[in-house]
Amino acid sequence: ITTMETRGTVVFPENFVWGAATASYQIEGAAKEDGRGPSIWDTFSATPGKVRDGDTGEVACDHYHRYRDDVALMKELSLNAYRFSVAWPRIQATGTGPASPAGLGFYDRLVDTLLEAGITPYVTLYHWDLPQALEDLGGWTSRETAYHFAEYAAIMYGRLGDRVSHWTTLNEPWVSAFLGYGSGVHAPGRTSPHDALKAAHHLLLGHGLAARTLRSAGAEEIMLVVNSAPVLTPAQVNDPDAAVSEADAAAVHRIHTLLTRQFLDPALFGSYPEEVLAAAGRNGGTAHILDGDLEIINAPIDLVGINYYNPCVVEDGPGLGADPAWPGSEGVRFAPADAPVTAMGWPIVPSGLSRLLVRLSQDYPQVGLMVTENGAAFDDVVEDGRVHDGGRLAYLEGHLRAAHEAIAAGADLRGYLVWSLLDNFEWAEGYSHRFGVVHVDYTTQVRTPKDSALWYRDVIGNNGFSWSPNKP
Ligand code: PNW
Picture (cartoon, helix red, strand yellow):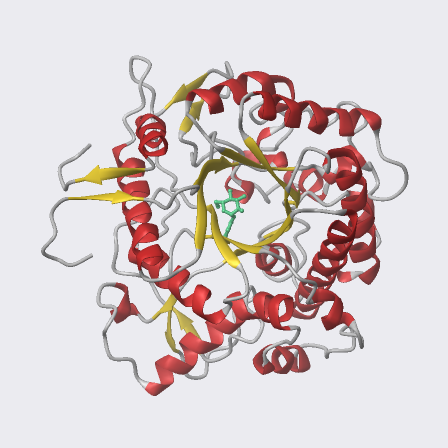
């Protein structure tokens, strides 16, 4: 995008996949129905002080009972694809043992309803709702959890594999490990750098074991989804070509390694970056990494899913200790970005998405990429049956232009899924922040497509859009 351009048209490649994403605990509700066991998020949200306003996912968007209406809504919005996750404790209440017919039945009906509507299901096996019974045995700090996860993956493929081609093992293992076991901001709320590093390794092991299982059962496409971001200095946020000192470059490299390479290097190259092993060495050791693990983790996959919201901004921070969510980040200062922010306080930097996609396509040429989440929280209100969410519309437009630019620059980007279809339970933030392109009234459960959803429907219909600065 040159600074001279004031309007333009972008058209995406043929067969580009357009859709929306959700996650089980964030929308389903029905937390105690049909034999579903408790997950770490039930426990965590029931613990005072952990989730804003004491919110829980007990009812959420009641999607468990309203999935038919929700699929009809997806069809109205012309979605090609819908990414959802399976609640493991609906399938195995304690994380092991025989599968629950009722739990399987729900996802079976959901998949059939999607297919009848002409919408391709993208199934994520783990979007953070670990059965509490497994957490009681150590959760992801226990190696056994990885093996249980692969058994659960086999169960799901056995039931849905005849109709579902697109499989994702894990959503954002960085968040599971480092917010769940490092900073403790997410469930299970543990705070130990050694546990977090162990959890990260066992999540990767679970990914590799499940990928092997899915592949040998016949899965067509296997994906790992990571939360990634370009790591920038403060000056680079608004000037990509800004000069970077040697010390700042080291901080940038360190955080890029901890955020992205820590997961994608083992999964795609079969090796950990040196810096990750060194960080583990300073935090309780590497005894949990056994001979042969990396070969399992390196199981062939087809796609990497990228969840992008904002860049990571860092600079040299001499003498600083590690951030609790970032074991190995000694000497790095996390800095604010000079950019407008969403209701989450997250900076809006669309160019970050093109930078990221181009870089990842270069660094990991053996896989295709998909934007599996991108979106923004704003304080939306319904007025006369409409939601005028111009801020979100502008966010999506900017990021889709950036995605298009990345494709033009050679990134192998196959599709884009907006986060999220519905307003939902935003983890530690509860219901205070709305990410949906569809508004949800949590009292009546009424759904209202926002202006961004109507715009997105047209984008899908045209496989692109025209933009100009004063367009709503
Ligand atoms: C992702 N962070 O979560 C998740 O995949 C979604 O379930 C979530 O609703 C969405 O992004 C919006 O937050 C993240 O603090 C949560 O770095 C927190 C962070 C990153 C991703």
